[in-house]
Amino acid sequence: MVTAMDLDTIVKNGRIVTASEILPPGLQIGIKDGKIVNIATSLAPAPHTKVIDAEGAYITPGGVDTHVHLAQDNCPTGDDWETGTRSAVAGGTTTIVAFCGQEKTDTSLFPVLEEYHGRSRGQSYVDYGFHFILTNPTKEILDNELKIIAEREGITSVKLYMTYERMQLTDRELLDIMMTTRSLGMTTMVHCENSDMIALITERLEARGLTDPYYHAISRPMIAENEASYRAIALAELVDTPILIVHMSSEVALATVREAQTRMLPIHAETCPQYLYLLSERLKGDNFEGAKCVCSPPLRHEKADLDALWQSVANGTITTFSSDHAPSKFYVEGGKRLGLIDGIPRFREIPNGLPGVETRVPLLFSSAYGPDARISLPRFVQITATNPAKLYGLGALKGSIAPGFDADLVIWYPDDYFMDGLEVKQDMLHHSIDYTPYEGMKLKNWPRYSLLRGEVVWDRDNGGVVGKMGQGNFVKRAKGELVMGKMGNHVKGMLSEERQMWA
Ligand code: DUC
Ligand code: ZN
Ligand code: ZN
Image 1: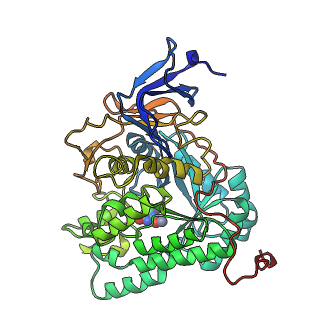
Image 2: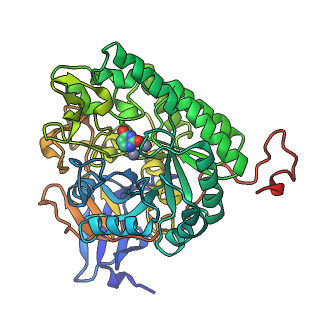
Image 3: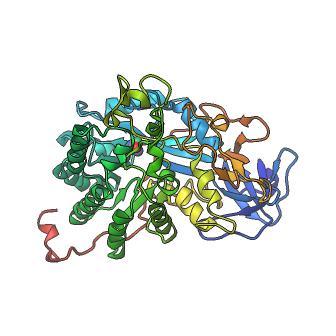
């Protein structure tokens, strides 16, 4: 039992936002040994207790960004663990889940895991976990290794690709993996785009010389995302497993997801900042600048497309909001300009992905309060922290401000602090990338402090990143929780006992 006298830190005078409400002003958060131990109207500090005055500002859970690419072989000019996680804390993210990538030639996952532990160990400013990208699901991996990866190594999620030659899986492979992840309770993320549609359009565009970065968006229309989303949902429904469709970008595919959710299927949907704030016009521009915004799925064309995404965020179809931070530098060899060959643009060769781990939380927070708010603050908390923590087996540790949880907090500035807004500029960010797609955007606020397990790791006015590299721990994750729907649904047209005949 901890008495108030034992507290290491008290955060006072804030407005705590949870996934369901904004608590009355003036509550105090007591922190001991990295955990939130009490929330009360008044806590007594001991002589050694550090007191942080939030000055009436909002306090939200430390951001949980469960879609971050760091130090992957396919992004040689991207962020490594030091720069990527330094950037995360400066933007209010205190936990990330990044990727270990199996190559098609890797027949065992264990050496891959060791390699990725080697790239991250001692290098992280934030707590972190891994997802496994599966590209070659051998029988040994499915029958034996994945169980050990989940239960012993604490890696309880996989990412599966329906496109990209290097990583793409067949429907049969997707089904085999889903059967295994279902039995192990692993969270199954799926990148949904129809590869053949993209290949057909790409070849025909190239034959006509239409190879500027803008045509990347033309080569991957919404219908490609929708077809693959429908197919992934059908495969998951057949084998009765939950899935999470990552980086959703289009109204049509989200309508497909919503229809499935209405039938109580456990289909989760993720979107990312780029699909709420940026349009395909950003792929145009002189000097190959459009390459900076090439990602897949691509940015969509119309303002109405952004509005539709916002509606899906507000109405609950979107379950989680991640950065898909997967950047490549623009001015450095091996980066975005790989798509400029002898001065000729070749959109097919541009490394996909944008930087965004630092701007994710401040962007959405700025859209979650004030007269022009697109969502509520509790909804902001749900999709930036609480839901991702639950979905990926961190729901007992992270993503909530309540006794027993890790004291991972973001303390914002008081509402009227940035009277004229705060302009996003590349030179204020902490990634190693040489641009931000959000340059010049005006935000309402920015994290003033980030706390990781009770320690201040970001203090914007006094030293910036004050946490230490290596302060972040690798976290073995539990099984993810369902946030949407349920298992055991009846598949229309199948007999009630039919699945048991083969499953
Ligand atoms: N798309 C992905 O699927 N991964 C990384 C970056 C991107 O744009
Ligand atoms: Zn993807
Ligand atoms: Zn990604």
